[in-house]
Length: 402
Ligand SMILES: *[C@@H]1O[C@H](CO)[C@@H](O)[C@H](O)[C@H]1NC(C)=O
Ligand SMILES: *[C@@H]1O[C@H](CO)[C@@H](O)[C@H](O)[C@H]1NC(C)=O
Ligand SMILES: *[C@@H]1O[C@H](CO)[C@@H](O)[C@H](O)[C@H]1NC(C)=O
Ligand SMILES: *[C@@H]1O[C@H](CO)[C@@H](O)[C@H](O)[C@H]1NC(C)=O
Ligand SMILES: *[C@@H]1O[C@H](CO)[C@@H](O)[C@H](O)[C@H]1NC(C)=O
Ligand SMILES: *[C@@H]1O[C@H](CO)[C@@H](O)[C@H](O)[C@H]1NC(C)=O
Ligand SMILES: *[C@@H]1O[C@H](CO)[C@@H](O)[C@H](O)[C@H]1NC(C)=O
Image (cartoon, rainbow, N blue to C red; front, side, top):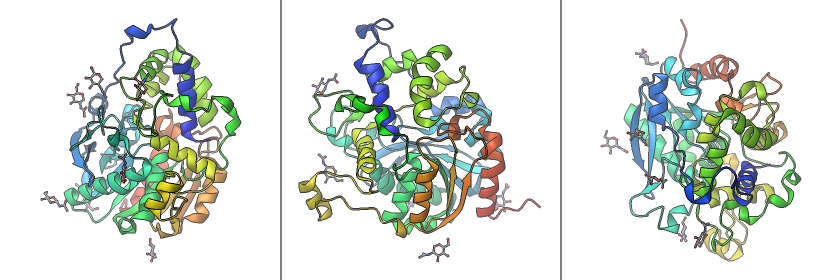
């Protein structure tokens, strides 16, 4: 099951059913979570904010945690995510561990999220055209803009990339669509790789809830608009309903996160759950979710399906063009969790047969390690970041201990 299915369930629970007992519709004050700079400061990390403009005019704010410029690492979040998802654990979070080991850390953000709602000419609140993108555009515009900026700024020949969930998809598409980027990345570490959705947990879990209403507006005429806007009623209600440890567990973690991502109570203690719910989901475009559903339903890793007429114009064929993963020659390390119900071991096996340059395929030891644990698990620094990630980075950055 796609993460977009999770989004649908969240919407179903929080929007269609409403929650009048807890909030009245005319008095919802959105909870705006602290931003990356504030979270970094709290953890004691230096942090520089950098604005980058993509070739097609989107302005992205990314964050730089300065280290040794010979060794830049770019870290990318997942579906409906932002840089913030990685730093909620403070001094045991991935950026902290990388910074302590000396790396020059760059935290990516893509168009549409809370740090990507600006454009040189388009207004996200007024122009539908602003939301005319899916993860395809993250890969062909956003990732290249960030990579080129970092390599120019640091003067390093290559960078290492770490991505989680849909963030990994971005690199699979990038290497296939823009093969000139293959040589700019020394290693791409995939947390919970997402490409095929052929063995995710059964769709019938959501059954009839999977309707168009889920995106928050059944009267929308096009498939192109913002989802999970920071000030939307949906997000305001969701954040209020998940704002205390008990409520977050009862309303969000147990009914939504765990069925979709795998059960792992040990790694997501109740006191920590509200923080996760405050930051995820962040805003994005409807097409990012619809594109994933198309891949799931068509069982094909292809570009956006605009319908036969528009496909003919764009791709010269009535069906959307399939991504040619054989062109992706990035050195890739796949890392999976045994209990990850979103990125399953069987789907990762399938992906492995399609990518030409998989260097390692690691299945983490803990039996309960789930989709969320990659970024938010209580002990992930001990299980993954310190023993595995730092070792892989050393190898591909030619760093010797002695
Ligand atoms: C983060 O929040 C601080 C305090 O409100 C603000 O000064 C800063 O501009 C914000 N940064 C971003 C990138 O939103
Ligand atoms: C930065 O990395 C380079 C290349 O690995 C190394 O030669 C240099 O000593 C490092 N600088 C610091 C301050 O550690
Ligand atoms: C969406 O973007 C594509 C280019 O990627 C462009 O051809 C198309 O006209 C745009 N559509 C709208 C409605 O903005
Ligand atoms: C690289 O950075 C310099 C400024 O540091 C800038 O003048 C130049 O245009 C940049 N080059 C590219 C290709 O972005
Ligand atoms: C739904 O979309 C329509 C048309 O774009 C708009 O007029 C309406 O206000 C929207 N409703 C909600 C609840 O967002
Ligand atoms: C949400 O509302 C606040 C207060 O009106 C505003 O400052 C902020 O820009 C809004 N955020 C978005 C993403 O529209
Ligand atoms: C792919 O990359 C490997 C090294 O990572 C290199 O040996 C090989 O020649 C590359 N293949 C192509 C077709 O570029």
